[in-house]
Image 1 (cartoon, rainbow, N blue to C red):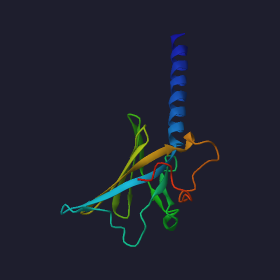
Image 2: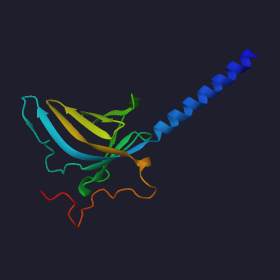
Image 3: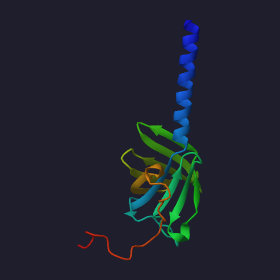
Image 4: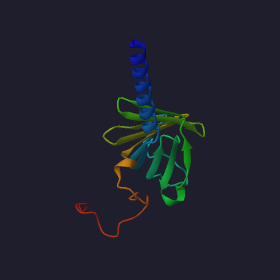
Length: 158
């Protein structure tokens, strides 16, 4: 009798953990970039040097596919960074990967704050912004990415 109860208990626990892991793997976030700063090895602080490329403004993070995909600006739309590690720690989502010899680390907090760090030889880029779980949006209402408003945002006139 005890063996049967333990078997049922272990089966239920296994099913619960499998469902929780599956739900975590299917999470997707839409992220916006609010600010970005670079620090070079000599202590110089300024905007990241992207050469002729535009700075990303929106991207999508897919935990199941382990990808970070740029959504905007239009000239960078569709660029993908492969993420090698996806973990949840104390409610925050943590991602890391390597792209072109650069280390990429991303943290999304439960409150929706987003921090992205890109480390290369002699420089660190820190990117700050916001993240929204794609599941938090009403179905079919995903942002287009790089739309501009024709009228000013209320309260933006200062």
